Image (cartoon, rainbow, N blue to C red; front, side, top):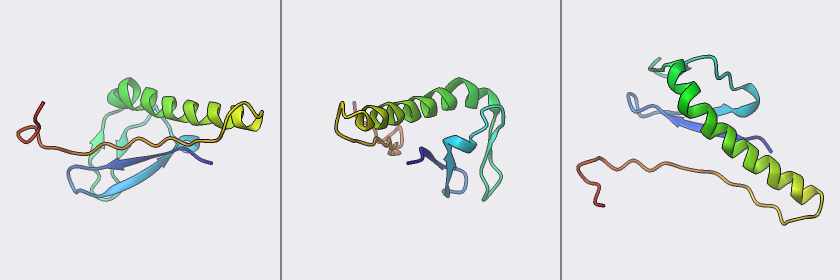
Length: 89
């Protein structure tokens, strides 16, 4: 299993994947389609901890399953875009 992060660029509305094993938190995230950039400051502060959390969750579940402590599950998280003016709380 490999932990991936699906990134959707809201500039060009295209998506691309990033893999934990090749993720470089010290670099900007750049859309390969339109070259839109998320600066490294935000990658460090928000993206890396979230991505690392999902990777660690899946790693721990796989490890515990391998040791026969629990059944195997895999977790993916997905954001659904709702425009702010359409969102009802």
